Length: 369
Ligand code: G3I
Image (cartoon, helix red, strand yellow):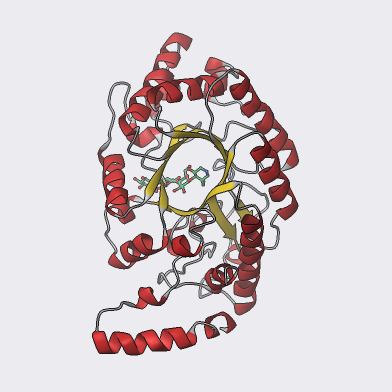
């Protein structure tokens, strides 16, 4: 409640104004993230199909008001955009590009090469030559189609293990560890006007970060373009690795890279591991879902304090950070309601299930006052 007090006079004034002119909506009382941080970094969200199709007017209003960049949560992943060897399905991706253009939102396309959410046919490709053809066609067809229409691509996603070695993915098995450099080379040729990034989770952790730096150095030393690195930022309440994050911002920026936080959320429910490896799961039991009927104030305040500390760090390094993207608009949308335990009620974002700003939102905004 304390966080709202500061804005009450403004809110009261606006309510009176609303009543008198009958034009302002409830959301217009809110400060806008994209405006407040305009001189610091862009502010993004992940978008799902329902949001791109504007099925919920409240969500649509909030997205257009708060965010100036967006990442497709699923629809540009290979299993959707490239379902068969010679079949591409651009319908939803085109819709997203049009929706974002209409709302002045820059698109960070996600993702060209990822071991997860691959089309079934890709796992059945036997010969190395055929796999190379799939890999090359996939990247060049999609990257070329959206060049000039999207701002950037997560070219390769999650190629590393926690210890910094290469993940034993189908790409590594078929193409060897130069596949990451090859992916950037093909993307750079197909999309000369698009920024190209490497994206991962836990790559702020020292061991994985060292692997990430080595991987990126390899790309740079091959003379291939890479513009930036994304730290996903799937973190846990009370366990923000602020020191590791700060060191990572500094070390990645020193390599001439733009630094981005690309999938930010702070999980408030119990979990036995860190990160975002979608193959990891946990058993469901009632104690794992304690806030079904609402988040206690004490946890809400902890969440606000974590977001405040994180954004204070982001602002300290605003000269190196290009973008901060939340992995979803509101708590109801978050993938963390379904993973690693299905059917939980999670609260990781700045807006609640009714699209109302949470205390964490006001704490983050207050850093700029
Ligand atoms: O589309 C099907 C639908 O037809 C089916 O009825 C339903 C039943 O389960 O599943 C739907 O697919 C789901 C898909 O999201 C679309 O909603 C998948 O089961 C579900 O696994 C998938 O989860 C996505 C996850 O990536 C998959 O790997 C999450 O929405 C998405 O937020 C998440 O995003 C990833 C980033 O791309 C990379 N970094 C980690 C991050 C979080 O896992």
